Length: 196
Image 1: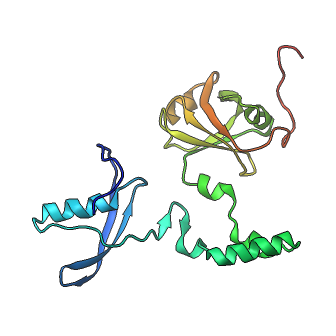
Image 2: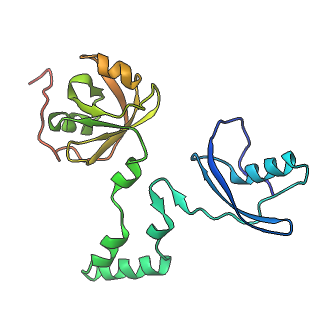
């Protein structure tokens, strides 16, 4: 069966494809690829290239970003942990949950000053003076994670310019904030309004 998702031209990279086992016409393989790669379509395309035809019989995701199968939990274990949490024991649930920063670690980051955090929490874009460090792979229009000096996830946004351009500028905005995670007031207010 082909992918049920609407097919459209997209560029995704397959970093590694390893054949693990061959039994007759069945092939077990492992793929390391960019997010959004259609593995069902990859199998069909490989079959077309070999003029043999192919389809995917089974698909198992073993890793997504920084999360692996070792991080997975059984649903009944999660349910038991939630019940224990309701009874006042959150220790098992705490072991199962991962901080949001695990997911943000897969996105290029901009680290901002503590004095800029509250402004971003109120929806302000990231201004050049508030930036402490940034990843070099930031590209204009690309997704960017905004983190505090202590590594806490503050927000997500889109870069208004490449990393090289951000490094050259002293004024203006570097990131258009689109999603704020941290509650306003978590950090001390380090900004003023025109009315103050």
